[in-house]
Length: 468
Image (cartoon, rainbow, N blue to C red; front, side, top):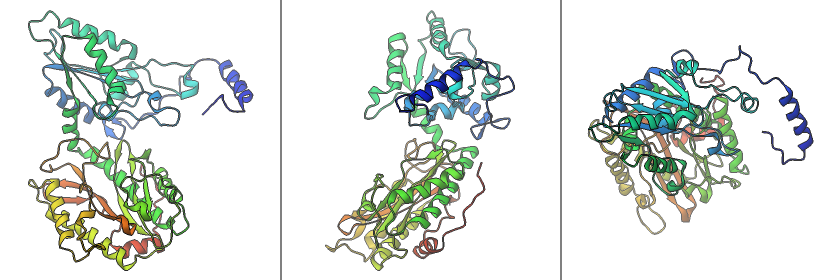
């Protein structure tokens, strides 16, 4: 990345002058790279269309407006990533995009419509960013959307749509958009967008779209499951690589490098979340991710890390003995954590079980174990987090919890963290919920303590073939 604050200022200035001296046009034979025909970001364009249709059936009293992410949202060090709900409905990764969906019959005299707005091409800027896709027929064909308009026309179009409904006898249509919540959300770009809508259209009720899309995203389609399985498979290879890298004297970040190199080599765009490589006392800290400590002999190393693949992320955890073999105490705790995870698996009943039911099964195993802490207490008190969660486009994916529906994907992660012993163990795997039981998507990664030891001593052959 060019940065004119560095000492190479004069060279970079000269380079800039050369670039600007070149003719400002893009060769006609160069096209924006696209996915295979009918595929957009790893999924059929028809899937995105079906999602939009499903959404429109649930918002018959209003229109949908959404904003996508901008490149500047990520600063100079972040790689652009589209907002999940925007991506889920469109497959459009173009920065600074907007979306308007109009159900049929909501606006007088207007049929159902869908429009994506993207910035017009800027040929001078493309010398820095690469060739971009602009609005028009080519974008319409690539996105599978009938109307792809310039982004600077978004507000004008929205004004026209809502003003056209002003004289109707029907109540003003609602405006469905994503209303963010949580710490700092009031400062977000989405919050500013909602405020603009409220000020511009005071007669139109603003309704939160997030709850509707969350329930849609909870149950995965076959194309999503394919991408999730690829994310899992890439993640497993990373864990095999880090198993070979973990040794006394190695820094946590060095082990992290081996893990994440495998992710990149196999086509992952980024990690699904900050990698956790916690050794010794750090193994007892749930979301430790500084990864700066030197691994000492005899410690346990909790590795909670996974790859994202085309917007879908796995979530995998294994615990490794730094010296290659578990001590008797470590092995006992490890086996108890593994037994708790397997008890939760066995407790699952299709169409009946909730995550809470599975957690109770895991806790009961810990309560009934003869293992104790130094004060004589049973060890379930050291299982200090929930048993699992949804995964998908977010590592803690969206959707309400209740009976686990077929087609959803969950984690089962049991753990025990005894800080006074500097001993933490977590084992986490990913499961597809089906009508006949749980399918373990991460079954190929060893989890028995003897298998983990063998994986560390011999390693595993690297899968050099790209997943994409």
